[in-house]
Image (cartoon, rainbow, N blue to C red; front, top):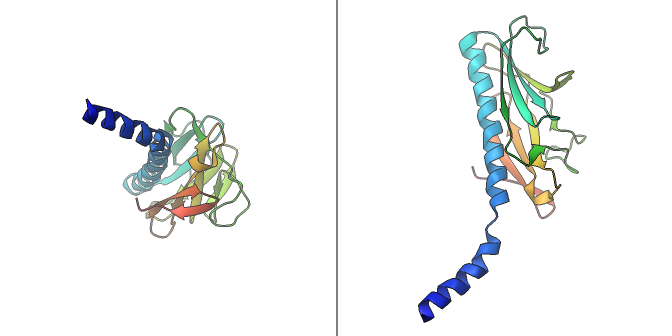
Length: 172
């Protein structure tokens, strides 16, 4: 009985330290990372421009085959979309990783279109440039903020977390 009581006490102390929100937001960050990679691969395999578009109002990302190369997501073009998990949304942080004016996505690779912030991938695998995409939760908790860094020259992605008032690069 004493051992069971000790285990129960230790579990009660440890349980509040486990943050399911942290894991959910990290998963959203990895979803954005994978979607960026899918967009780049699709541009290479389809030999056409591909747009990665943030639909921040619907909390989803779209990949659009820009077959006419006009830089816009037209109704006749093929597209796929992925939604963030429930409760997550694209966010405008109070402070950005790159020091840019706060918006859902920042960086030289981001263009603003009527569909939303857009990163363009070209048939040779390159992108319009580097970018940061920000995701948070509807309650506005700052510890739930994540930034996904995309290096336009290499296609490398990194996850950043906003902890204790500053951005920290994650080891994922």
